[in-house]
Length: 233
Image 1 (cartoon, rainbow, N blue to C red):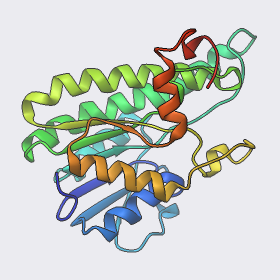
Image 2 (cartoon, one colour; image 1 turned 180 degrees about the horizontal axis):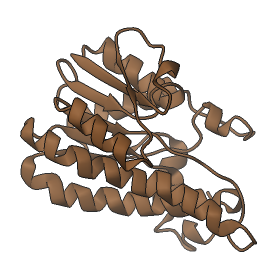
Image 3 (cartoon, rainbow, N blue to C red; image 1 turned 45 degrees about the vertical axis):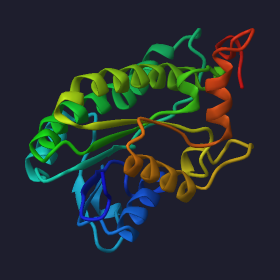
């Protein structure tokens, strides 16, 4: 699909990758951009329409679907990355929080906007996954599990919406230079570069984006001996 003239809804659009994606859409001539955030007042990018949206809140999602019925491109970017091991006390709450946002939140959005995209000619959904969809790092174990589930969700939705000509894109990346990973001391990719690669893939009709070297190594490592999921990249 073409970005020029499209109508996009971006979750988590007030900062980081979401904000970079919005700015790239504006530069490429999107006709309208709904910039969604829990606090719409935190959206300060000129030329967009702020939308109140907490993807863990079914009422918020339903209200967004009702008011944004002209969407042709959905970028499911909102997510959380809680830390903590799984084999310890308190891990159930951490795991539930990660799944509620990263998996069930994305599912809510796909459920709500899939029919809208179909009515508007098909369009596209891009789900922000991770290189950690395929491998596990102990400090981010709950996040890794939720992103693995979101990857499977992306693959399922792709199959289900193919008949209505909706492109479903799974985006995998390592560390992106945003507030979410500010405490991690490791190489990071600027969010503007990731946003550009996602949009390039959408316009080219590609269903998967390996947005940086970390993602490419992670996928290649699945077929290695031993496979990457037994350790880390």
